[in-house]
Image (cartoon, rainbow, N blue to C red; front, side, top):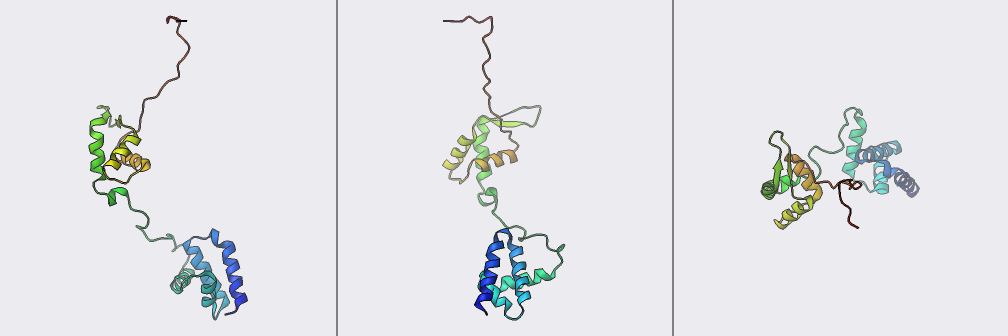
Length: 165
């Protein structure tokens, strides 16, 4: 491995790294190693810090047609929903909302007289690790509409009202 070659690969990688997703990095590294020829894999590994298996996967993706490559990650990746990790969250939320639930019997519209902040505080008191965004999503999932009383701007005095001065 030539130090100049590794430095050159490193400089190229650093200048375009921010534009890559996971697959792009692998495919670029595989293409770079392939263009170097003998010793290319070790040179790219030394310059980028990528592992051998990562480069091997990049070579496999390089051989595929672009139409086959649709997903970057496996299905099911990412953070799990709070209701999946905290099984009593929905039942506790409904228990908190029941005394404060209002609705229109003619439509499926439901709302609560409790504010989001108070609901979050009650859930946190019940040892649930939730925030306002999570509670908002859960309320929407349960069919609640987030409504509140609106204060109206006071207009000019009506002529029938007596002015006290």
